Length: 501
Image 1 (cartoon, rainbow, N blue to C red):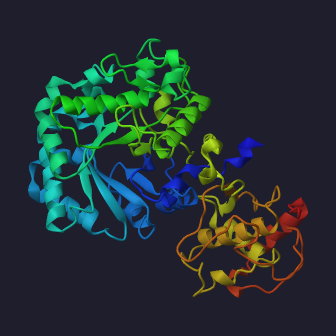
Image 2: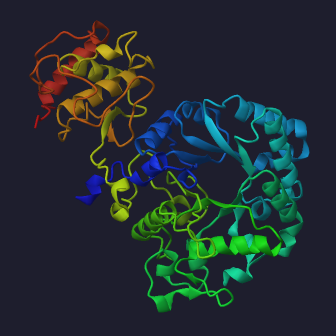
Image 3: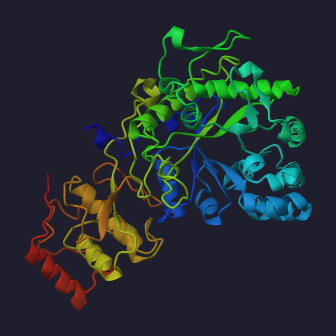
């Protein structure tokens, strides 16, 4: 079934790793307004499993930056809006921010971009007068450390600053923001940086009162007579995304800037909405993001700049259930917080680059917050009666660190789960284990989605969980207390047996 094929489905992002030249990429935004935000190591495990090579953070979280170290993942770090005033009013504050959040992590963490604020001109207008100073101060700090060529500095802007966006050739910037935009564009031009733009065809469609067809917003094929035509240039537009990008190019040309590349820092489609948002559906979100990915990576370009693709960060990695606002604001994610996909991206027609089958890649891990004694009992069973080879968990072994019961239980649970062919019921351990699509590999401790590859039987016979047979295994995991003995008796009595297929 298709729903079972999605456990590792962002195959499109593997393209970023194999393109002959990386002048174009698809990345993802990582928001953090979740009631149960995954640990940074879990986030990075998901990124690795999905072969996501570019991410944008909305802050400079130390834990996240440390977790991203030595992964090769290219990172866009952000100065949050609440820090803009401090950074923009003091060169020293900006230098300290760069030292603490960039220099202390680079180059182990592959930071390529600093986003100074987010939609500052529209979301935080009182900071607009010092926005360009903030960019200059941050850039000066990079220059002082000889990192100005490796790390670009820019600021993501809302597409609403562009007025009269169709036809694109008539587009211009809101006059009220020009006093900031002109110096900003000069800065971007002088530093060879990007004009960062957040592009949301969903909102353009919603606010058009039926003028914009849904298919036009979703990149769906249009008949020639349905395409939008710019009467000034006679260019044909088949989707809102391209029209918005070209509107940005024309708006920059209107103020005499013609050589600044556009980068889309946010774009996506919500999968759930309120009753007044009937087109915020899983199918439409899937359609939009699938078509966007193919459009960008196929280097289609735009009618004004054919063949020149615009690198884009999809909004976003996780659904943010704790985010304020309507229901749709909480449902832009590709994944739920447990690593399961919200929907299956439809990328099969993108050729051999998407042919790698990563379906059914699931792992058995200890539940977050599970009782330590229950975890220890399950660990004891897996390493003993369960006949998992737990030698890698011994001191000096590749999976010894982190030395805690949850991490060690995850190794043992997953090893047993895979040895049992991932059969139904083999990832339970009396309720303290759960199945996830997030690869729990870390450091030298590598888990495999292939059956049994991260562990071996101590003999050729796999026991049922209610088995009373014994076997040698690392003594450190033989917990001979009354709790462990009682639990094993309960397991046998209740018949929590595992089925070997």
